[in-house]
Every structure is written in C-alpha cells, then in structure tokens.
Length: 500
Image (cartoon, rainbow, N blue to C red; front, side, top):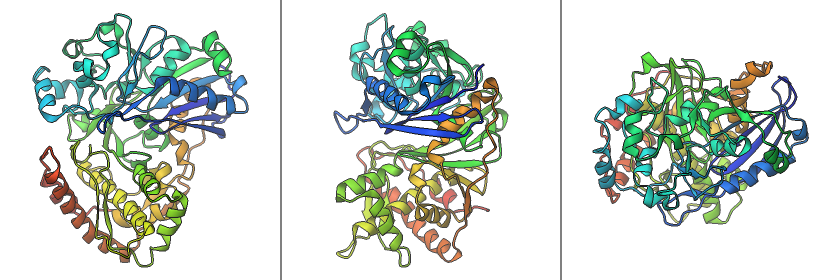
C-alpha cells in the first residue's frame, strides 16, 4: 500500500478537522470547519449530516497534498442516531448523544421492554444516552424514517462520512458499544436487543475493527472532495477510542483526560479486570477483543468558557489572559459546570449550572477563573468515582491549551499532569496509530511535551473548595425538576485523597 499523505478526519461536536500526516506519521497540515448544533427546544440537540459532508470536503480541499493522498481514516462523535437512505444521504437531522428529550418515566417504561440481563449483555447499565432508547421512540426522534424500508442507521458521525465516501456502511466496536445494541463480549449486534429496538437488522452497519478498510473512495466522492478515486477508507473509531490511542493510553496502566467542548476521563483495561458492567461506561476496544476502555464522560468542559465569552461579549483568549491575572489572589466565586445537565459521575438531565459567591466586585475575568476551576473540579469528581490509575494524568484537548488551565488542573487534582502541546490533533493521531501497521509506517512515540506539578500551597485550598463544590452539586441536583437521586457515596469517595 502506498505511503503518501494520509488524511485523518475528526468530526467533532463543534468542529471538523482534517489532519494531513506524512509517511513518517508527522503532522503536515490541519484544516478546520465549524459544525453547528441546532436545538429546536432546550433538550433537543441535532446536527445536519450534509453539513458534515460539506465541511469534510472543504477542509480536505484546504490541505496541500490531498489530491495525492494514499488513504483516509476517520474518527468523530459517537452515540448519535443518524438516519440515512441507501445512497448515504440524510433522511433527517442527526440526533446527538447530548439530546435529552426522554424523561425518567419514559426511560423506566422503555427499560421494562429490554431483557433483564441488558447490562451483562452490553457491558453497561442502561443510560439515557443509549441510542436504543431513541430507536424505541423513533416517531419522536426521527419521524421521517418511521416505516421506511430503505433506511440505514449510522451511530457515529464518521460512519455517515465513510458511507458517503465508499457506499459501504460500517461501524467500529467502540462506537457500537455506545448504542445499547452490541454484545460486549461477542462484539456483534445482539438479536434480542435489535428486536426490542424495533428495527430491521439489515439496516444496521457492519461492525469492523478500527484498522479495517470500509471500502474505497468512489468516483463520485472523489470528484466532490478532490481526493483520488480508489484510495482505501479505513474505519477508524469513535473519538473516545482514538483519543485514547492518541494519548498513548491504549495499554492498561495509564489514565488520561480529554477536555474539548465536552470532556471525559478514561483508561484501557483488560476485559477480565474491567468486569463490566461498572458504574461508568465500558466501551469495546477498537481492535482487541480482550480489552475495553472505561470512560466517565461529562457534558460541559470548554463549552463553559465559550458560553461565558459569548454571554459577557468578551474574546475568549482575552478572558483566559484576564483569568490568569487573578491567580495571585484567586476569587471567591465558584462555578458548577452543569450547563446541559450531567452524565458523570452522576446522571441528571435536568440539573443546571450556577455561580456561587458573586458580589459587586466580581468581574468577567473572575468568573472565567471560577469556570476553569469548576471544570477541573468536574475532572476530579469523575476521576475519584471512576477509580482510574494514579498520576501522572495525561491531559489532551483544546480546552486545556492555556497554561493556567493546566496549572489549576494540577492544583485541584493534587497530582502531576502530563501535557501534549498539539493535543487538539490527538484523536487524529490515534486514528493514524490504529492503521499505521497496515500502511507500513511507524509514527514516532510521543513523549509528553511537559509536566505540570501541583503547587503545594494551593492543594489544600482547592480541597476545601472541592468539598463546597460537592455540597453545591448535591443541592443543585435536589433542586432539579427530576429530583434525581444524587449518590451520597459520591462525597465519601471523592473526599478520599488520591495517592500520587
């Protein structure tokens, strides 16, 4: 197979990135296009797959050697519900993982229609974000697909793109394990769950390992994108898997944190050691049957600062600089980052965020500092509850780009963190690492670009504030319309100090 430029496309929740790698696995160029989320009502979150397609073509055209590319590999957001026709064109907007139009009573009713051993089969306890629930309520989520015989289902943004590039509909095991339809040990669609979902099994994508070829670029797709016809399109994997590989956490023993628009903490474990189901997500490894990725996701990371910048009509970078200037005398303000509800370490679709401790002297910069700390508290909360491996913690993603964000993270966690400077391309690098052996290339091992140690004088201060954060989070949950039970054990586990 040729070893010319390899293009990895990452279809994220707010931006599509096309990354061009050379024959040695080094980044040569990056192009970006925005992706828009639409919310017809506050609990609805949708995107247009045609916008993904246009963004993909536009980003690829911007790369200098795309016309000579030798392969394409894909990654992107998971746990979406995407209805496509036989030609891979969308029948309706894609329903995102963050869509929360089902209430607790409806979920309880739907769960009664599922096999009693659902969690054992799938490796996960039923979660409101599992796509099977949306399939069971299809007239609400995708009425245009109801009753159509030509519908094809995709569950990852990258799968909608690969289908359009090749004419073949496929999915990786990691993305498939977020649907509630795949057996965690069989790595195949579970017949009983497919029946419970009420869909035709022939409408489902084929489950392929992340390093397998979905198909070859069609002539039509080549004309639209400018890529060479006939080049292989590799399956790749959902973003949680490729970020894991890009952070070099694809073997047991090392945890990492991703901070983008949303965020998660994760680690790779042997399937036997993971012993699913757990309190957090267990995702199938993209390649190996004997391994899984455990993930604790939270809904708001960088989105909190984006929201604050928009709300205060300030430039985000200026806010970050201003927040850093507050570090000598940190503000009292505290932030709960539940702008869209929460998934981990507790599930509550109705809980909402808050600022505490505001007064007449509180500035936008002080609120930005509080938001940075609040995001770090969310990371600590998830790490503590997940019981992931100790330090150093690798931190990746664009929402950890500023030095003050990294320093506050280390202070709040009370542990050293490792930083990858070009971490915004980590998912693309992970996708490349998956397929590199089949391309005959060997990306150089990536040591951390730097380490940030906690400041001893700040650790205790953040510890005390974290106790307040936990109490405020419990209060926020108690006040949410769902009155969702907040596990009081959260506080007990989270207050246990971690060993560095």
